[in-house]
Length: 159
Image 1 (cartoon, rainbow, N blue to C red):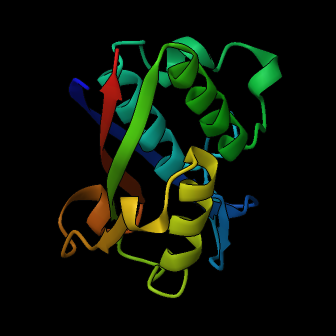
Image 2: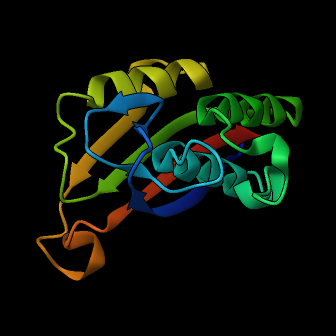
């Protein structure tokens, strides 16, 4: 089995009047993330890492924000679609590792549920999904609470 790796990244600004969805979990906060879909930056970064590992493009190519079909889309459903595409191309997802950077809210109470959602969506054991949260120590716009950044790495095998 040949092993391949991909890196994913996503960032969104906070927006009033939207729920904050991360890793398919609604996180208690006064603002959500601005986006064409549900704005789930964790899932979006994982999608890009997986697509990158398979050299299959990126989330914007597969689910463009110019297409009304994806307006308000559940990003976990998009992640499941990516899994099916990778499986159809004879790839096996090995693991994903995610780092979420934001000042608030604190994600510790939500991490286990986020890992569970991502692992179930990818058909992986929970031990193959890592999600961590960090602050930006008040530096730049993320550090001032304007938004969120997420980095993801994925490992796949096959083809």
